[in-house]
Length: 199
Image (cartoon, one colour):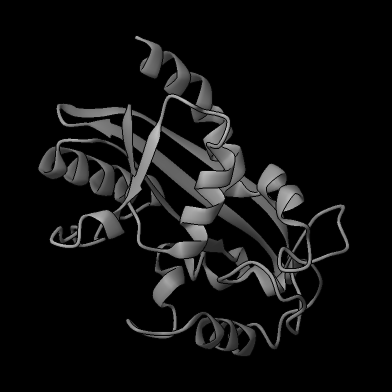
């Protein structure tokens, strides 16, 4: 069965390919395989709404079963920011480092529970006829005052999950995939995907 991972983000592709590696029934593709396709504007009001829009649009226009995710970091003390704007917190073409720098600046006055945060991921699965299922995953922790670690991407060098002492950028990939928001969301979807592929 052909399955599109609707992103060009190499880090997301790597994570999702790793999490889907046990599924021998899937031939995986990414948006890099469809260079003429233009994704829809991400103008939803929640991670789930945006993920569903991305999945249904790609599935319909490319006639292929599609997984799409939308995810980001939520800091309650900042009113939920960066939230759905996580990837463009410091501007439309901002780098991960620029986004982290702005976040650290805006959190410089916060201490203790004020530095609590969580990652949220919504993943939607759609076929050309429409949406089939959507799931969410979250992971709670806190943000450091400076970056640590060389792995991961986005806000990983700042985020430490509760009960852990390493940032997401310091953890082994297998550990991060098991406990991350994306890993949790995809685990919820795997049983459905397996039964769908077998039907």
